[in-house]
Length: 238
Image (cartoon, rainbow, N blue to C red; front, side, top):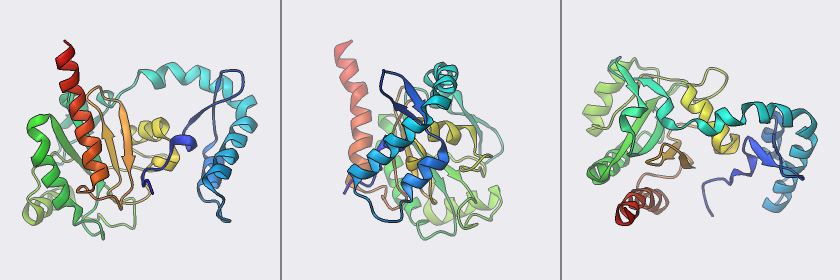
């Protein structure tokens, strides 16, 4: 089964008449956490119904903010690096990024090894992993930035860029993560450490992968290689 959830729980849904409506997050949450095991088809119907219910209130708000949402890409956001320096994602413009919220004391922490291997394998082709340490899930990143850096470099030989500790969920989420949630929807937002967002060379979000999807998985490798190949295809046309 595809571990990347479909985007039908996203922020915007097409409604009858050609417009779009934003579904309140509370309704998205109810659809995502359905307690009686509805089928995928029934779940999609539920979210569609939620969109129709929200339409009278949401159409105006969606129209007002739509232009801003469309205009943004990953290159519009800036982190602080793990060394305390400005880290604008625009510095990676034209590259493919895998942005991962990490933690040092998680059952998935061993994924650092796979992330580093992925980074090394494809870096020369224009690919980078970006690690985003976060204490949001289970308080599993209690370390300070310097300790995180030492741990990653010493234990896993990490050389890919890392940000300072950041919040990736809720109202205080870093703007990149708030934008990503709007773009791909609540269902595809981080639910635990080592959630992965794939960003294309144009700065657009391509897809996301659940924490359980390892960096070595065929799913991740296939998606990364497909994005890297797009530049080669474009170069052949130019």
